[in-house]
Image (tube, rainbow, N blue to C red; front, side):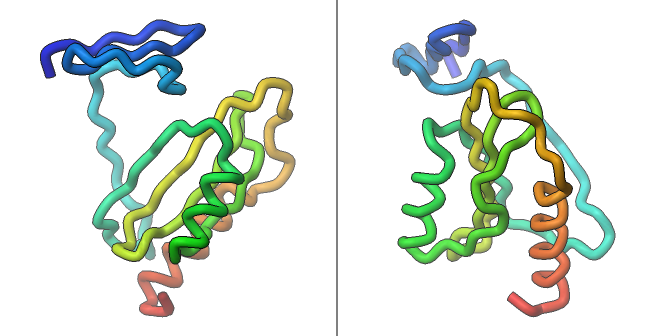
Length: 125
């Protein structure tokens, strides 16, 4: 990459000399490496994407054949979260800013993910 920059506020992102206004997230070069929990299968891909509206993107994904893991739900830090599996079993995490949204009051953000991955490991999906 020749250039990577981000500013807060309008969230303007510069990638390889291409300006992407209102990209939705401040980017910094980093690599996140995580390990899976016991009972979870290996995943071909875990993709985290900022979108304008989680519920709208989830509906489009489901219409295209995706399996909903976690429907659009409040997450910590005034954000919305949604998760789905595409037909290749990549797990997509969708995020959207949601100013004024309270933190979750249940553990749905973890239990839905855990139940899906454990059922996949058991060959149920």
